[in-house]
Image: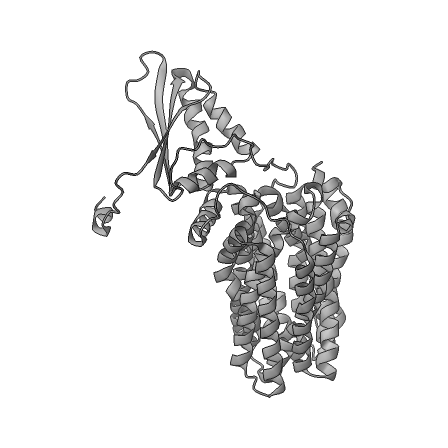
Length: 541
């Protein structure tokens, strides 16, 4: 059993910094859900269009689709604490502005959607950094339960916030809901201000922003475990996101609920999620990860389809409770899988891609399901979503998430410092050549081993990679191979050395040991002439 599953469910709260930050985040998220009720209730009063109402969800999540990867790159190259402080302060100001506009009776559907977009920008900047700080606050064996508690805190907010929001909107109106959300951001700002973060030290200067974004994209492109996790998240969120986009229409225009009733239904989702937190660690210890995901995909599909049949609040409440249980279980599992399968140097960028994946799925899904509801009705949209989730599950179930069942060793490989060759860190491109002599009998084994070497080189920053074989070199029983790859600069190449993990080095060793000398002969060459080719030359080639 992985160490992450042996740790007690509440152990992470013994770490003071984690406990303070998660408590402050709960308070802020309660404010966010209060605002969520206010926004959707106000939009439902302004229009009966399911599409316009669902666009509130699109506005909140669309910036995540476009900004999350950049936000992840920022969180990997700047102080995450300072980035979070700036983002939370920005969101406080936006929420306060929305409250002021509402008090002044200047709110229209366009203004409401625009303000939700601005808040979405702050959320996009916050989420990758927030997810990435969990390993800084907890030891490795407590990360899974720390992620579950972080998710539980979010869903406690989801259970409590809508109920409070429904009461505030019903008694005082949406403007006060927005004002309370602005005030709630102060909790996180204060907690972050008190947190004495230990900034990791490194020998090399920090990455530049655009280079960090490119490396993040390259990492995702060549990391099969992360790709599997992202596809699983997209398939789940696209279909289950219908709950957040169409529930206002269902509750207000079909079930004829008051603001308190709408808040109660939203709270049922959070109550289901909180309940899942109590049994999820034990369930993870007894079930393989992919069987667990299959179970909760099925529960979510049944719950969404049941919403299409709901004619009473109690029917919708049961269905939403089941959906909340599944939402927490699936996304907490996916989140933990990223924590355990991505090294620290690229963790925020990985979470940026993950946030972009589920945020984009929510944004696009909200618009899609709003359009489906306009054409086939609210209940038809819920039926279609439940059936679609079952169909999607059949396809993605073959993609196995393995990190929680067999944790890889992602600790940095403690290689000796690269010798100082007196080279400018910005010099480049750099050509690295590794020469191998492989017994003819092991030729095919070597070529197969180098496929995995290629994946790691490209994933960690190589911009080109090739393997060459010298014709007629097997006369002495040894075949000559040359591995060549290019790094953008000397500094970027040195960073690649620091990015290698213990597991990566085992892959390299398996290939190197096929050479009778046990390691290749290595040369580093800096570009003396590297004039970019004209576009026509590249097309001709």
